Image (cartoon, rainbow, N blue to C red; front, side, top):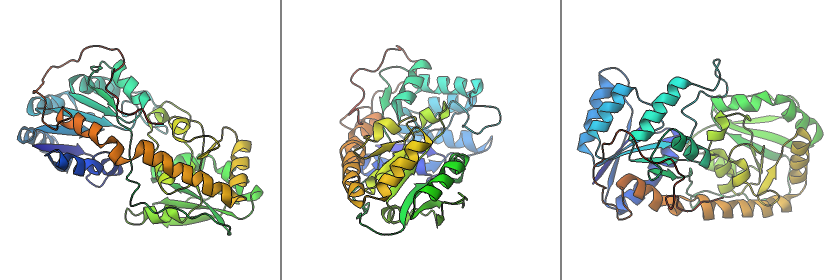
Length: 359
């Protein structure tokens, strides 16, 4: 049996963690996986979509197709799976037109109603798919996962400077830069601390020294494991409700305590006072960072708890069977009967479709 994944790019971070990570599990179920970047252009894209006829299942990741392209893909797909880990039905936090987008919402509704399965990265996205009219039996919560086994972990000990660390893209770095005043204050009030930025752009945070590490897939895990405290901050808006906390997972897998604002999935991923701190105010941030910087033993205990959370609730092997079932249509790995209904049924919450609620 064969599956095709149509993604933004084969090396895109969302493909790496939400599709490619499960290739071995699909292979164990007797399925091969082909990953292709979604073609651009009025001729190239429909031609690519028609090749779906050669596969037993198609995974469309994040992209909201035009009505014409969706019709081509639906007719060509024996089984169609839509995967999302962002509020793709809205614009991002920094868009000049604002977050809400009726046009995107219409495309999203059309797509989730026609998909045989919808794999959503958090409960908020599950809810939005259901509100858009997706069949309740088709929607599954599938959190973004990491494979903790190859991830090196931090050995916490006394030393100076203590490294805060943030990892992400230049687009999400904008949110961190909006809080420049907070990072400047931490630099002034917490002695012996630096901020390691793993990104493709260098920010400036006033009194808080920045240690820039260019992002690389090959080196990101080691760069995190050389740090001491993971930092996550996201705007408190509708767009952020769709975020699935990848950077937090990376910190936890590296054995780092995390300090984050209590927005979106952060409260469910971070055990307050055990694997990190949820900081609602600037005073909370300064207190949390100062406490962790001054107590290597606390960092070590919290880091161990953090690693345990990933292994128990967010590891790839923990969710592999759920992914395989979504793609193949059955827990045994064989495809479900082809389904071409345009609009799904009921609107009640899924019952028995979410495997392992996680933190």
